[in-house]
Image 1 (cartoon, rainbow, N blue to C red):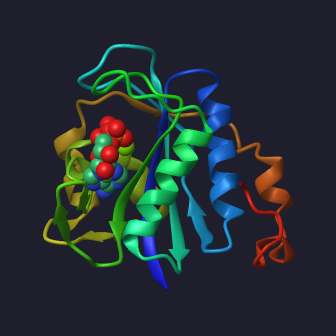
Image 2: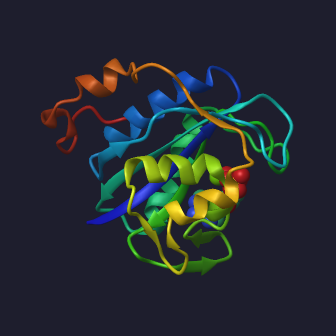
Length: 182
Ligand code: ADP
Ligand code: MG
């Protein structure tokens, strides 16, 4: 089992609902246990046009090797209608691996810790919310990096997380083969 952190973002369609549904979809995978979910944040697009983004971060425990987790992220993005017409295009769902245990990976199609993690408030703020003492391999404490992104607009979406599907999940539904998101 490996503890990993996943970053979710969306700014096309009903982005808030998509993020909630995507967290439920992750929780329904028998290879993944969702340990924590950050609040939902509204953030300004960076290096891109389009509407504001909604972002959140989840902490998971997974039996998957990292490449299988990346493939799963791509599959779920696809299920939520992700298209890639051009770099940094608006997206229905972006699902990135931020951290995977204490592993450092530097390959053509997979870099972990995520290369832009330390320079994005929309990742650092929710990460620190769910894990205030988090240490990023080779970069130190995540909270110490917050001053460096303080110029980026980010606001917590008010109100409690209304996520009936996630709240309704019982341990039984997390058992292999039950309630899976295909
Ligand atoms: P963005 O960089 O805006 O998230 P995409 O979601 O289109 O853009 O991802 C582009 C590519 O980044 C993917 O095809 C994937 O292989 C690669 N990639 C490299 N490292 C990671 C990571 N840690 N998590 C997710 N994708 C990654
Ligand atoms: Mg991505």
